[in-house]
Amino acid sequence: MPSIFFDALRMSNRVLHRAVWHGRKLGWNERKNRWNLGEHGNGISSMIVIAKKFGQLGNRLFLYGHLIAAAEEYGVPLVNPCFSDYADLFPATKGDIWCQYPRGESISGEPSQFTREATARITSLTARGLGILGGSNRKVEVVRLAGSRQSCDLGSDEFASLVWSKHVLVQGWLFRSERLFKKHREKILEHFAISEQHQRIVDSTLTSIREGADVVVGIHLRQGDYANFMNGKYFFSTSQYAELMHEIARQLSPKRVRFLVCGNGTFDETDFPGLSVCCGAGGVIEDLYSFAGVDLLVGPPSTFTGWASFYGNVPLYSIDSMEESPDFGEKLQGRSGLAA
Image 1 (cartoon, rainbow, N blue to C red):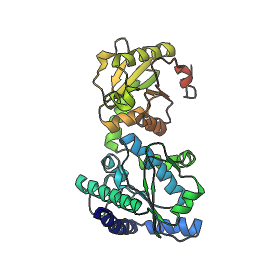
Image 2: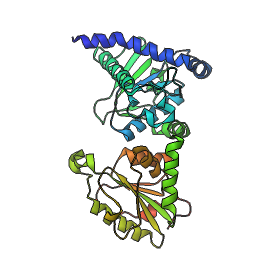
Image 3: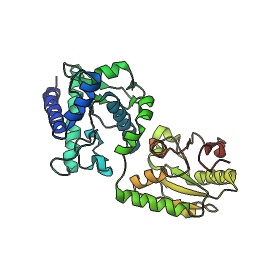
Image 4: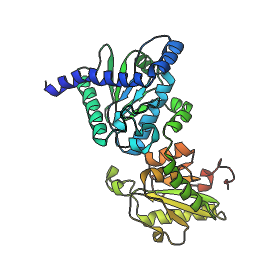
């Protein structure tokens, strides 16, 4: 068997020991004693480790968020060094190489990107090595999901028993519990609050676009990578988006509709004649959280708009085809003062 797997197996104890030691330095034991000994009475010192990257920002946020909900529910800490690409975007993870929940603070200053990536790589190799060698021992369990369809129910009794007895390294996409995700929504929102600097940009964008508007509709003009994703099924031209926006404005008339357009294509306000349009600031975090502040979100299926919808409690219409004829007034039902 290749030596890398034996190296990963030996490294696993070092990685987990380092994570546990770091957690103890940050006061995990006090909270874990309150959670495990007080509520569950098992006295086991265990944690969940996200040990593989999956997708871009939206995908990472949903995976991290669902596992935060599980960690909160079961009273175990969570570490996510594989959030390395986006850790600097959030105050809760910016100074923490482990990107842990409950939130921790760096004990050695803000880590470099190189150090983050090295830690993520080592963690992933550790889990991979353990998985190939059996994935389970007395103290560690590796849960690997094959592809993007296999799922793991984080709300199940089986998963609860597992995390109360071992360190659990997870690799895959659909680690989910909608029940726990909703139950612990406020904790998730708190962990992913953005910095004051980013929030000022978001607030400025939303204040500007709401001037003279009764309804603000966010349009996710996802092009770029969607030209190839699922053979271009959800790739639409800018002119197709413009036609849809005219239909939205028509349906919501006489309300004054303004559109916040963000995406990874090349466009500007002149591509949408006859419409009141503002293009986003262009930064991924500013666009994402500006979307969380609109009245209605429209775009192709994407965890990017999915996260904005979750974070801001904004109704979302996912475009499966431009041939559909949705009732956008109905989509706004429940939004205070906006129902048709």
